[in-house]
Length: 555
Image (cartoon, rainbow, N blue to C red):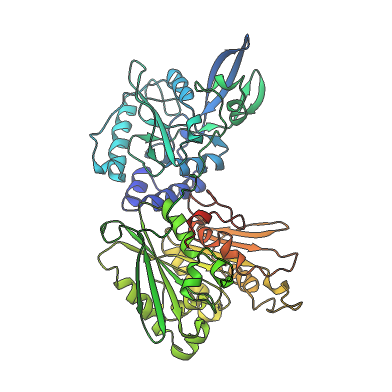
């Protein structure tokens, strides 16, 4: 059921017009999850196909959305072009798949009405939301002329190119496959094409969803099973069977990890050292948006140890426990439309709790550090991320303490086993609530493990309430007074999610009583903290799994 307070399609298009690709696709996912879909779109339409194989004729019935994925109401809807990774994520959540080239042809043959393609002259603006909305309005006018004979809910085709599945994606990971935009005589303008990267999204693209369940010869099965079957695949594919009938994350490259990165080191405030790590081409592309990640170092670690390197015999083990530089390089491959800049923050004594106590009891200097770093990017569109490991969380709480409200340009706050200093009586929960309610672009990620049962030298070292396990549960409980959380629990994890995925707590159970403090970062923790709540969450990596960034580690 579509919520009565949902945005209309045109309103939603205006709302996302100035967002970058990642933010606007996150907004689309949020609208889908809250049910802001036209009523007519929810009634899938049957398509029947036959194919002869091994001397037998096979028949299949599958069900497709009557139109491309749309946000809004029957009266005002927006056909939303998406990247294939987001389209795949939405399909997975709705128990659907994307079509093949043959399915697009079959859908077009079965459609009534068949709309005539409405190309817009190619330009740099073809990947922007205003052009998406312009094309959407042209289609709406076309569709209005057919409503008397074919009301909303009839299967319609011809007005978009489809994001499709193809066996060639197994070798072309990191690419999008597009096909279709059939003309009146049934010939597509766009042959099957895999020349664009997964981040190319233009106005002509449409996301047609197909129910994963179907019937073959009267028996229920799945699209995936049919596409992987050498005998039955011909029902749905004119390219043979599929090994991987879905979009998967791009294969990791074989890079020169530190080539081209721009470094700047400077001192700020008493005893605070900052290293800015900027991507290659940063200075040459001032119009690209900046995501400035403020990474406050864990207790006892230097900037070099936090960045990490490929260790050799005799090296200090601290160089091999975080690898923030390698994880950042991995992330940059997924965010080519944004400059990811990391500011490593190291303080005198290598302990942010001790530095704050000695130099900044009222937390004005922490706020000043953030302001100084923000000013360095004046004139650029910049979003801030506050994060850090272990005692680095003290820097984030110092920033919260020093302000009446969290600024709107803070896009994400992530605690990597680092929220020891959380205290509702200091206003932390109130400030987080106001910030989270202030914008759908604000995200909170909390990663922790059951540290109060962990043993070091056969002894526990934090209390049930004082460790990150206890502090995380307290924070979640306080936020639950303002947000409705969904919770899951099993032998390994406790998960709490709210605000359409913008708030996530992922708490690791610890039946073996191990010390997992640094593992939470090393095992893709920084990657996960930066991707939670986005369409790329869980794509190409597993939190608490093998190091996805291995090939990005420098020497």
